[in-house]
Length: 624
Image (cartoon, rainbow, N blue to C red; front, side):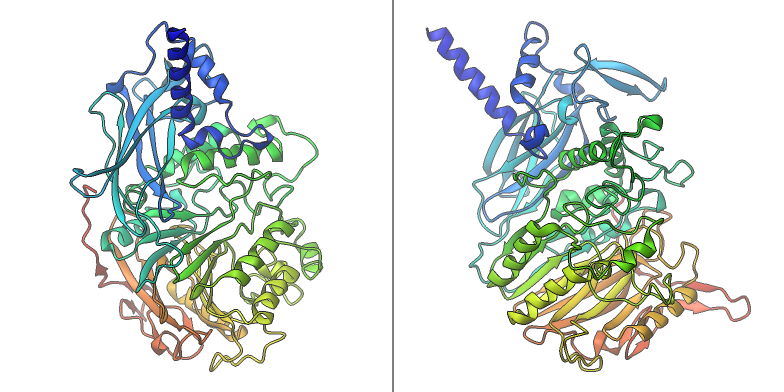
């Protein structure tokens, strides 16, 4: 009897320690998308007669540490603890083994698939002397040896340090730093965030991530999507694995793993809690609920060339994303839900949308662009589906914070792009909010009818910088000169490394000329810039929000160079960009009113070449 009770207690303990790894139930237990823990435990129990667990000294923390989705009393912690650097090629191992790539022989060999036990500690101090909370979790090939846990029992708006350790050993991960959010009722003087999107590994180094981390004047990171790209990249200067376009679960795991080798991305994850959403490339270009531009046939599977059905591809991409990102499980009937919100004290509510994959109506797929333009005003078209729309509008109406900050992957403001890539009959980008005018108008109607002010839309996706007043042009008496009639602002950022939409080889002169044309054709667009890759930071106070845009002069090497491109403000209660916009002076691009003072650029009139020089330097610690 005592032995049976002991076995029951041990079994319950093992189940709890497995289930503490959130990835066993990600992205959802619905639709059989989670991992069956009873099957995992049964399989591992069969190996108890032999070595039960992997050799602790052979385990590596292959891709650093990360944290995310902070709450006032808890935060998500992430690492990967594995015998191999390569990702796992299947859900369930074959004959108790998993493939291991030997880089010396360039062959796959077999390695033990036994579970790996990991402890974690959260500390109050950088010296790791004061333990606040601790826990244990297991990982295995079922989830690509990733570990994702919720560390609880924390204090609001407090900085912590954390570390993972292989159980019963001194094999430890790097030390991470994170911060919880304040309670919804807490009053704050200031919060800093860095905003990123569109990091394309083959295009160059992710210097934008590292620069903000080294300056270290923010509290959290917001990522608006395109964390990875799914394209084939065999000829790139910095190729990724696998080199083919990705479709399978292994493909997505391996691509994420390659991205997570960039030292500046590792540094940012190690220092800040991230709040993320996906755009389209985490799954496939120009995605919608039934497919994407890269895989349109929704009736049957593709078996050749490693292709899979649309639904299977989405399942693979979503599962790998949840395995590798420090994101909470949003447990709903629909397994694609990533939209959620965060209360950052009484200062602002952060509303993170999914305008790409959840329940999006058909978008431009290259072959149907004219058709999508024709139906862009149809009342039934939606970017996010009725369930997310209703949730979104209720979030706006019920918010009592000083500011409402909305993380939207794609540009919200109406942008006439005729001079860029449009035409007289198709003047707007139908893959952005402009292709879903009824959804956009319902959002604006909610803001105007309910007198909801202090709204800030964030956007990525476009690989360019856009700063606009947020306005319902057809219904508000808007003044571009003063900003009267606006209901908020939009800060849209360029890419970390993805190419300029004006052309990867465009000169700074060509890009700025295009910016001037866009400014001319769009009265609410106050600043536009498309030459530099980079990011922006926001300092948020009860009185105002200041947005600082930074450009990276070079992505060819890992370096700390950056330019301050422009500074923009919005004052609480004014619901528009502060005038003069950007202080009437920016480093690059084009302003509606003001000067472009290119202090770091010279033009050789003899050769026609432009030269960038005199960088504002950030000291880089190459050992970081």
